[in-house]
Length: 478
Image (cartoon, rainbow, N blue to C red; front, side, top):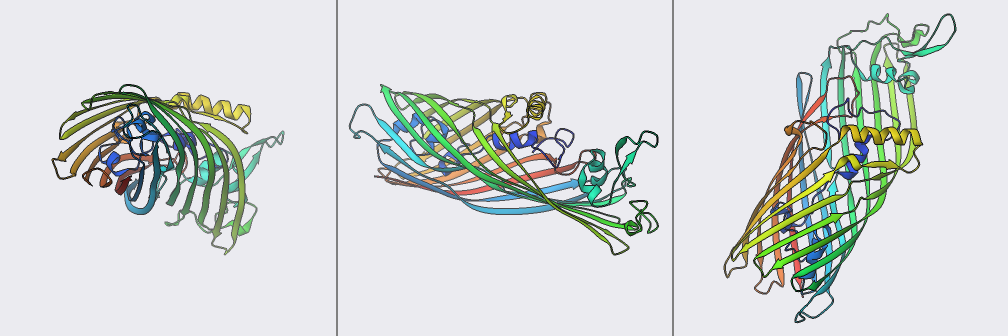
């Protein structure tokens, strides 16, 4: 989603730059130990999770390892529209991860090699938005759609074409509406990005590890938006017709549109990593994620109606299909950890240049070029910062963890309220030889956002979002 409606108003027909950001913005690695340390332990992780953090650390694994994660997401959204606010909530339970790590040499060998296979869900689109308020200004979704000569209000008898009386030249669509409508919206989003990954890593020299992973990314996205504008205060009398020569259009009562965007997509990317271990005291590493090349198939459905006091209904039911390709930017990460017997501290910084996002594929060249120019003008570079710590209670196998993440919103000059902030915490228990490890994590995130789903000129729908995750992970080593 984008910062303001003026940046990316819903055009109801074609892909927009918000679609590129939706698939490009960084997700999370949903492993309880990793997440409870702010996703910052990419230089000492020996489970499948390393495949999507820094694959070089797979080389630390000395035993066949299975790990899995299950969690619940709780999403709260308080939307402020005009002078009203409305709170909405949504929950989701997900299998986030299932993976294997297979060492290729014995645990007594001086240098180690390992491979990994598995599944990880790095991002979910579990969202909800509700708003409702009376807009006394001269703006409405009807007027927005009319201003771009959209067929929706025309087919619903809310706008009409105007022609030059002398030349009969088409001048554009016009409407009688001048705002003063009650406006209501209800938007549900669901889906996610899933990775099927293969990784390999090896200790090519003493305490120097290299690794790489290939990730096949599949997913879906569904946004179901319902928008209603109604004459709740009798601003439009029964004598007023929306189409002058059509008596059935007298007495406008309400306009309703159900706007459904349905995607299926797939793509791929590579990640390359390096790790240097100074005994068991300090670890320094880095990784590069190549752009994800994602092919999207979209069906965009529009169902709607207009109701008049004459008991007449005008209706539409149509679908528009699009196919396009989105290329995400490179991601460059550096990380380090310091291990002081019972305490480990970690930190990581990731650089992403979102101006490198691109559209390609089946789009017409002028449309593709315009979108890519708008990406360059709108977005900026970011540095994602993550820190974490783990305290291990000696001789018990018990551990406690905490962390934090700061993910800047990648629109140029956006206020800090739109940056995503997360606090994390967790507990773990591990058997003496590490044969079994069970971890739990809790993540609390908060940020503000302005929805782009509802028109260009209408009062913005500002959202105050709180996201909470509860996660449990189990690792078995043989």
